[in-house]
Image 1 (cartoon, helix red, strand yellow):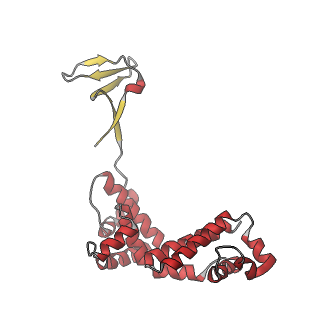
Image 2: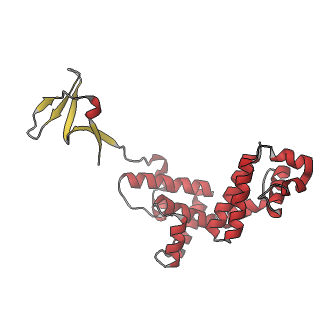
Image 3: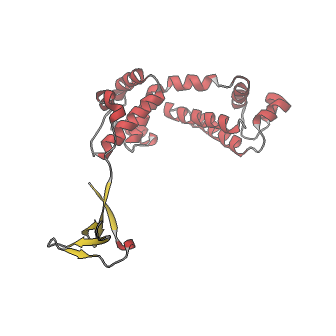
Length: 223
């Protein structure tokens, strides 16, 4: 069914309008339309073939503009407004994604930008340069993700400019491996392959044979 494909596009439009700072009424309209298609038991294409645009408008929660966009997708396999919106909001999408990797939501970003805690314009130029370098929004986002994973695993700070600096190394950037080691009551443990036994190393460096159960072993991440 086309329902899920069109629903995904409508929800993407909702997100892009939110990034753009469009009216809450229009954002809700696309959100509602996406949910209608998700819950629809019948293929929306069948509804259109049976009753045309009028049939789409009869669906509760589907307005005139949204119905026309659904019709456009059924006929052409794409929605021009969606493509234009992606292009228009490209820079903002990249900036928003960068802050999301730092744990800052879109709403927080908007609030901080209003309070001048974040100077939004400072990120516009590097985001545009990153888009030109990557060639697409998706590739730019993936590059940011790679740098974020690599930096966060090493507790390093990173900026959009870090992506430029690491561009030639992107394919080689790997997050630091998380190593977990066994402990029993905060004392380190070691496995003897020859004796097939666990030992606990006490505060004096003595190896004490572990007589407990495996579920009592605590695995801690070594930073």
